[in-house]
Image 1 (spheres, rainbow, N blue to C red):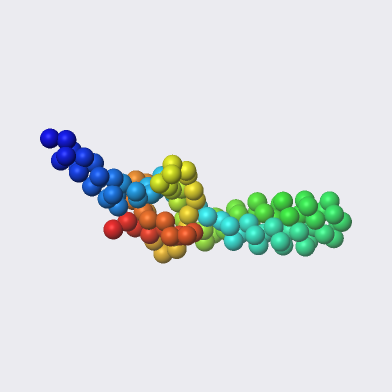
Image 2 (cartoon, rainbow, N blue to C red):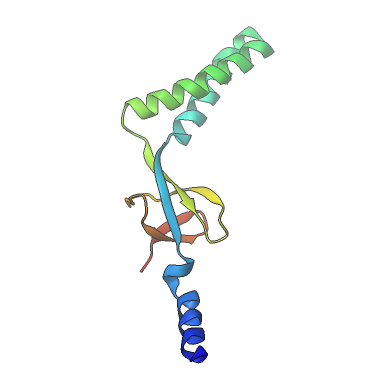
Length: 114
């Protein structure tokens, strides 16, 4: 009687659904706006010296993020709980996932589990 239960446990442990990562939530990704705003702020702030450069970069960083998000140009990023229990952030251009969806991690991208 123990052999079928061991076989069932092994089959469940080896199934792809048991090892698939799970989407926890969706967040806006404004990395491009932050980078562009930070560099632009750095260059304009440099007119005021080193302190101005740092202040300009900080203002540009947060301003660029807000501009990208308010114009609707931000892409979705997903918080994903991976196989080892860690939570990581991934982007998936052109794809949409809902919280609870099973996904497969391929490097820095995710795709729907099959």
